[in-house]
Image (cartoon, rainbow, N blue to C red; front, side, top):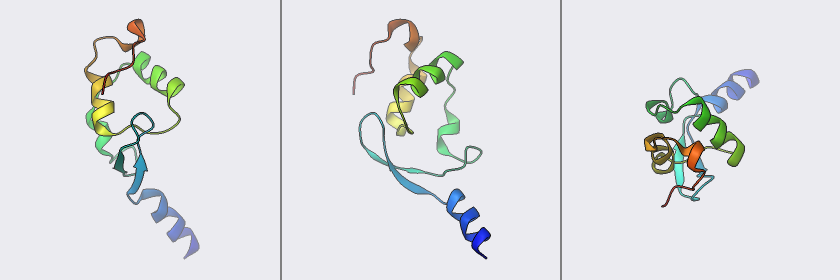
Amino acid sequence: MLLLLFYLSLHMPANKQCAKCNATFECKNDATDCWCQQYTLSSDALSYLKANYEDCLCSQCLRSYANQANPIISQIPVQQ
């Protein structure tokens, strides 16, 4: 029973705060079923985000990085 509760806690949606703008958003805690999977990011963009943020970004912030042509070359933060 305890193992089942632990498993469910890992896969249940959780409210998080965006590491960039502090907005509250829902994270599904499961990379195969999360809304963030709709965005395509280059490996350079993913590396940049991992190096600069400790946790997830909200959809607005993540979308802004996904829409940038090359966020690594410019190294300019996305405007809110």
